[in-house]
Image 1 (spheres, rainbow, N blue to C red):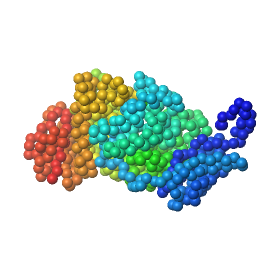
Image 2 (cartoon, protein in one colour):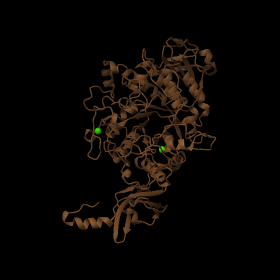
Image 3 (cartoon, helix red, strand yellow):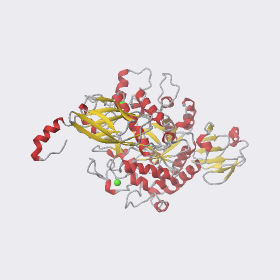
Image 4 (spheres, rainbow, N blue to C red):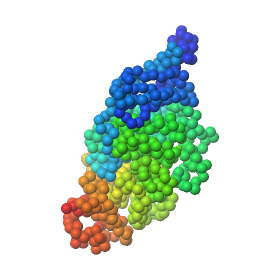
Length: 635
Ligand SMILES: [Ca+2]
Ligand SMILES: [Ca+2]
């Protein structure tokens, strides 16, 4: 509403009653040469009654104007033809004598944009929670426009980490051997409490000001690329926030799944693929809200779906992204969600997207991968899936029993904790169900799982075994920040606010700085960080080596039945062979080369990746209790 001088208030109000305004146009800009159709969402008081034209060149035309249920929206189909010239156009909204003019930029597309490469098996993805990684700009810890103010002393509060903090520590990430960065969401989350996790988006087109700005995000992507680090954006289409600006005035009655009286999702993760499921049960799964503060988006509304498709494309093109991680994949209506993934990959054919398909059964996970031959004919168009079954198996094999205490609870059906390593062999035996093993993201933990430092009993040997598996098993490895330094909370159960802990050294005045070699060496005297430097170096050695190993990145796997809590496997590609032997037992073991001769015969001399020592198959190769051997054989 226009601001009025007191003297003119009466007249001004009368004008405002019929004068419209434009408060938002989304996407914020566009480009020439895109495949994705442009449909502008225009929001403003009374704008639904206006006509729309675009000035600035013959190559850009208005195709159609759609009114919404609310009089304060228009959806405008714009045809950016092959003849369109890059430049600033003007949107002209008219009603009677009223005219509103808004500039709209249609820029030249970045050269080679559609052909961009994405994250692959050659990468290591480093996952951070940006509020907890590093505070590069204390002036934005609290801002006037956002509800929740910084409170570092509270585990669920905002701690002040930001984009500048990420930019300042890209060298740390690259030095560790990581070549891709997945940050949990950075878009505005204006929830009054618990907003630090960012999963309740209140504005899909703006970076939260407590992290920085859209411009700084784009700068961060550019600087990461200079250091060989790809950027993966974490996106959420299933739900937004009750604090989202559109919740005060929805464009369509069915823009979100209406929820009066409130219905929570039943979180029955198999319903979306269960051929015997009740329609009512499935509706509650898909349309029920994730939690009461997160309205469930209705992707069956074609305007909603188009909004998310071009929003995704906009962020890739605008900031130069390399990949997406999509939250709560199967809580979205599955057919429109598959159309979303298809739209993004039609625009960027090599763009990789990994969906959060948190399910313990391999067949459930496999269903969600693009081109999987599902019996119901469904194709998700989702290139990559997360290997939760393998994560569970590694966790089960390495979780330390706690004497005299109830064991931490895993996911249902995962069996006893601290068990034999056979579970990992069994998980990999299920590889036949997966359509494309090169698009499986593998991981030990993430921001929704108890710290492995805690569950593995603060035991560096278990941690090293886990990282060895992560570096040498098939798929795209992803690690959670701080696990390379044995971050622990002291609680082996999931406790979100605490497990997403501040990275020591990320805040001015931190007594410990684990970002630097010197800081880690100094911290070794502190019992909390006694293993940090040693574990960090182990992880770095492994993943720096992995960058040059074609067998581990793209080779086949051959494994042998585990015996006495030991597990031997080979990765090979015809040029290079890598042998991995995990000794998860409490005894020293001699490698049983004769059992492995199917692969080991003729290998000659290899190099122990962790020590640089020569290893030959004729030697009696001993492997210490609870440790791993990795040998690289190249011609
Ligand atoms: Ca800050
Ligand atoms: Ca949903």
